[in-house]
Length: 88
Figure: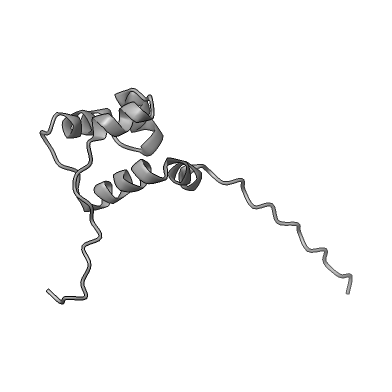
């Protein structure tokens, strides 16, 4: 690898501790961030490691949970005014 390549995928976080700090059950954590309950359980029990994108999301949840919630929150629909047609 090139010496300028930087490993941006963090290691596997302690999901149970992260979830506990947020005072969320497994089901609440899963629903809030788009994981299945089985996936959260498997991560916590060490049966499965999260893949790279999931580890990145978990790292952001750990450091900036509100940013993740803002990003995941459905945005209000864009209301466009209809242009009035000019009479010919």
